[in-house]
Image (cartoon, rainbow, N blue to C red; front, side, top):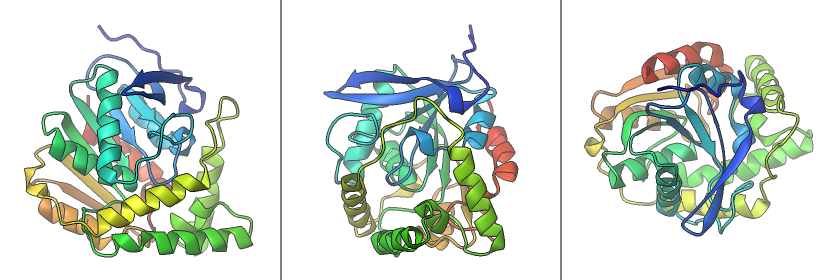
Length: 283
């Protein structure tokens, strides 16, 4: 029997904790419980407050949605892993601690790196997979993410802006408008906000991404989950051709490239993307 705890908005979903494998994970859930949950895997230096409520709320209309902080990030305890494989293992620990045996995965950027490792290690866990703004292990120029990130953090600091405005969006009128709107949406939650992410998290996660970018490719032909891949047409962080590479290597996958947008194409075009994600994920 499905029971609903949907409060209408991710902005008001309570923060909960669960302890597993020696770490305490902070997480939020909303939407109708029962059935297969949609677990969200977040991006570089992100905590629970970094998910676009317009996308989360749309999916949570008819699906049980779970977001969580990686180990050592935000309100989750422990030491931040310095490899993507270890982060994926922690995600598995969290998912199984909640008693989930089958899930759908919604991922953005670094979360997509984790998802690929998680699925290859636990092939029967994931039914459907959404990969946005991401790329494959060993993908060309992924190891350059650190340089792009530090450069854009500096650019943002000079104009007192959020670095995501530079990292996720084009610096043209459409991109700048979308960036400001995105940051406003992230700030809709006024109480019970997550613990700020430390600069040490950034350094450790960037080191993990560099290793991932310089690793031998994974055999993505082993991924049998239904897969939706999206990106903007001008992703400077995880170059757009890597989304096309994922599409070629994951059999039966669907690819959508959004025009005039960057790494955060799904956020700039959330009004177009959210219905597509909802339809893809289904029930």
